[in-house]
Image (cartoon, rainbow, N blue to C red; front, top):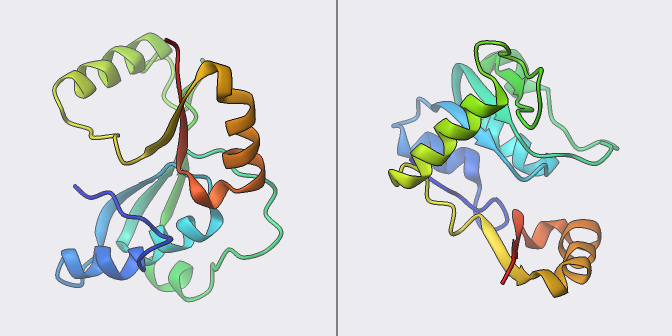
Length: 148
């Protein structure tokens, strides 16, 4: 398991290096950044899956479906699980997804500390949203809000 920063490294190359050149079976892309999606495609094994969780703005170019798409043949799965019906409903209801995710977090199976940055108090959330989501999304993967 790895968490990589596409602003500091070529994630596709790092994923290939970590797997002896094969690539990974699954990438979960949470940022909604199109360049991060390009990195994810480049790091996949043949026929691998990208679970795209992030909420993207309109794409005005920048996605590279050339060589990667034709030689890797990736599967792009849009993973919207915030309400029913989701892709796997009724087998996976919103309640089952929430229960499973909370259990996995409690078991330490996910480390989200480096993904949620910055974490701001609720009183600063409107300004932080404008700064890190609207104006400079490249500076934050996910904005956290603390309700003290």
